[in-house]
Length: 56
Image (cartoon, rainbow, N blue to C red):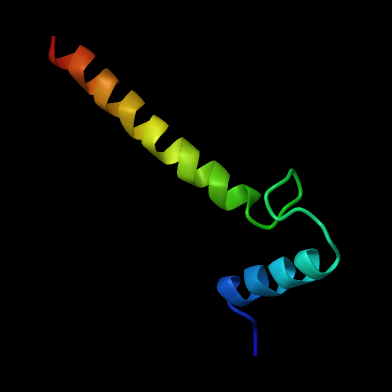
């Protein structure tokens, strides 16, 4: 049985934590999640702004 993405992330987080590694740094397990969290509203704002320009 294949592990879910959540289980893989959990296992990697536990491994990094137990090895004293950063969870949020460049290679941290949460880095992609933070990146998506930060980029999502920026992409929405860009789309809204471009949509306003097309209506003008």
